[in-house]
Length: 202
Length: 202
DNA sequence: TCTTGATTTGACCATCTGGTCAAACTCACG
DNA sequence: CGTGAGTTTGACCAGATGGTCAAATCAAGA
Image (tube, rainbow over all chains, first blue to last red):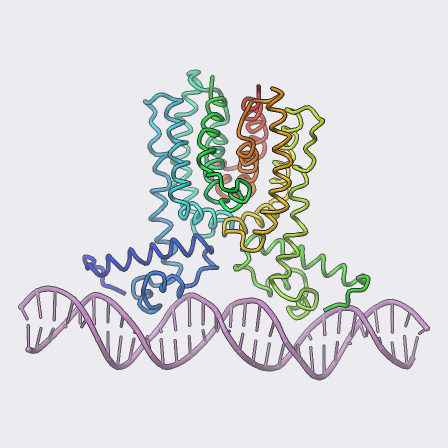
């Protein structure tokens, strides 16, 4: 294991390569389905070399997840209480959908984990995520009280946004099996936009 | 392997026990994460005994999936071109949500498979599923043409129903981490019902 | 250039896992 | 009963997999 001084050039490069490779492999096969060898090869390292940088498979997974959680929640974090309600929400949705397209691997990484009961990030959900969501649903509720948007169950409103946007990343195969050549996101964006405009209209 | 005559009493019982156990294990851990031993134990059999009924782990998985696909698609199959458009769609959604609650394991089984690219059911998607969806979107399009429901992209309308309902089964941990003690489905039903009434109103 | 810590690797290990097999046991039916 | 087919199992195997370790190689500062 490298000493915990300032990371060397090589350390930086290899750690990054490992996390990048791990994202590919874990998101495609899940934790159990991924092998250390696979990750090492994809990172251009030997297995013992990889284990020189991370003490275990589990450690790679954990590092990856906690590193990405922030990115994953950023759009919700940006929801601004002082902005125009409808525009804020629609902007959030748009960003979330964009992430589904551009960060499919990340979405699948979380999906894999969640479908199997989130054994490794259960704590983050109950703490970081719950806190953030509570903070933002409070804003939503205020907007509803002010008649700026329709009154709805705020938690389920959030769930619906997650469901509708992440569906396109997580279940991409299914979507493409049905749409054929049509680009999923081309149709998804206006559809979801319309949906929320109708739903949220006071 | 048992001869392919009429199945004996014991064969019936054990096959059923194996599939039931396999549903538990595969849905909770995914294909790769499940072990034959685990399934055997949960079915109350020894591993070689289990392999007397199914030739391989893969065979169990396949039998399970293909057996369940029919059940899974039944609600959509029931969508009746001659019924009242709005009521037909809302009934479909309600049944789908009910399935998310009552058949969580089944939902997760498919979710696990889909998130990882559906390596084992890709064909079913492109054939059975695609055919059924095409058949039903045609009905939806007709209803839109007749002005019975709002004009929307029919495929994405279907996707949205799948996403919104299955989210509660597949990502149950996340939903519960946020809702706390509140029953997810109690709030989900009216929320989703309202959503589609607003969305589909012509 | 030399030295020292950082990096890399081949060989190895224990365990897990899917699957096999021959022998033992059980059951239904004549 | 007796018997043959149906059922069950302990012992076993080969390959995969996570992880270890000592030795070899490399890189950068004195």
